[in-house]
Length: 400
Ligand code: FEO
Image (cartoon, rainbow, N blue to C red):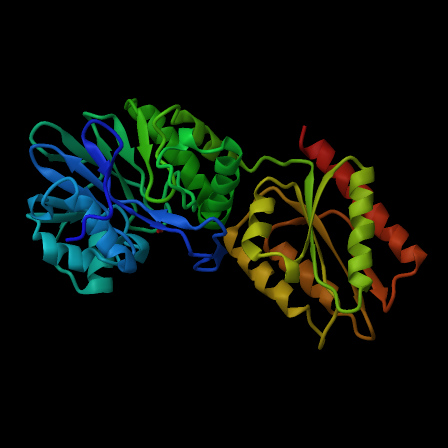
């Protein structure tokens, strides 16, 4: 076993034994410009538990960090809070190396682990069940569909610590293991991006979970997610932030999302933005060929309006817009108003397709679409500007 990688103590009885993925830039379609971490944790009681593992290529790193604290063979239990491959990719090999007494997961987790790896002897733990480690216990709480059916979180009573798996996580590779060592603005941006791209469709369940945690009355001093930093100072900060994300309250920020062939739809987008600004709104413009879909989703999280434009090509919308619109629809954003716009040469179907897509996303269309044949003239650009002003006014009323 190499001794390059060391564990980091995060509480009286818990060590971080995860891995840092400095180079990942695409996490199943989500742009991870700052990389990520796969966090695994070692709980040292009279019995020893490993909480989650790491993505397959990082097995050596995790095993070395474990070995820097204990002989890995001393691990009695492996708890799988979440069976997605970034946390179970090396589970099979870890079981072989460690030979634990038990591997534990939720009922859905046990099924998923069997389906992924053919592993059958997973001990199922129920919601609220505890595992005795001798001088402390681990308690499991199911968090179904946050964000997989198998998801659960694990509470260590003695350290008042929650292993929250993907919950309260972010994709951020850093040498700092604790949130209080990292710039708050970076934390806020990456937390929002993570929530928008992973959790947004499950916001009602997030609200329920936060309520349940509050009602349980458990003391939480530390939150240790499976990605990003550990919260040891003011863990309420990330809990409150998630509460706000889940609400998706209407704001006066608008996203103008579009693409262009010969500059006409681009000109219309800029005229709409000008109207939005004149109406007092905050504007984010995304010409989608220059923006990543996951950054658009992040902007949508705290927006009150989505205004989408496309030229017509082969009776349809521009293909890069199809990509981002399908992605956004799947994320189920709420409380949005919007409109469509676009240029065309002779048939002009794109705007109608966009209207339909917005309606399917339950975006309330609050202004008639604006279409321009070929190059927009002054009258068309005035309509675009007017659209921006009207939408800004509506957002202002909705956001109070
Ligand atoms: Fe980090 Fe859902 O896996």
